[in-house]
Amino acid sequence: MRRMCRSRLIWLAVLILGGSLFVAAPAGAKEEKAYSLRASYSLLEEFGFELSRRFNPSFYLNLGFSDQRWRLQAEFLPVPAWTFKAGYDMTDEKYLAGLEHRWRLGENITLLSALDYFQLREGEGSSLDYRSCFQIGIGGDNLVYAGVQGEYVPPAVNNPAVHNPEFFIQLDLNWYFRRGWHLRFEPTIMVEGDFYHRLTLDRKWENGITGGLYIGQNRDYYWDAGLFIHL
Image 1 (cartoon, rainbow, N blue to C red):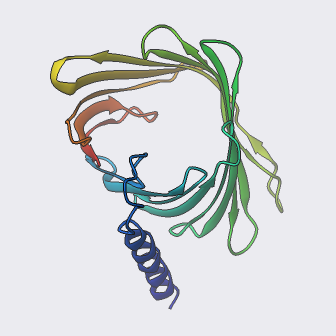
Image 2 (image 1 turned 45 degrees about the vertical axis):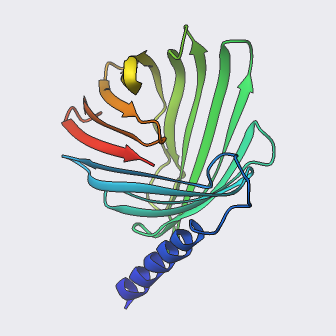
């Protein structure tokens, strides 16, 4: 019975969000498009997608399926530097509440901070994911991220609190070529020695569609490769 209800909720969300994509925009509007779709397939995670609907410059609704998980999430941007999030993980049956903040410290330095709180729908169980880092421009579209990320699980019955902070450095290196071709390399180094990376080759066509493929190694040292398209 629960699986049937969950399936109906998933398809109801798909229909609501999908139907809203085809609402006609005001005549003559030349602003940012009201929807976007990114679909991908990889050897490890298989099929995934993220469908986003922009109702106005301050409110977004996203429906995603990744790593065999369904998630519905709303984002509210009351001011340019703040983003508030609320959502529901339909696979693990848990709620999400979070916020993101951008603090520009200089011409090429920005402090990025994010908090995500998860709460199970039934029974006890919550966790807090966090990430805070400096985003440093090093010329062109090349960036360096340096900071800390981790997860905090509050104490529960017979279980102590769990806290695993990790310091990291991440590079975002980009090269652009003729006819819309773009090469991107994203290596991440953890202070404790873990290393993972991704290399992406994509092309953006004149109609705005971007497609490409990637290869890399995840945090568990498994190699993965896939392709994607962004409408």
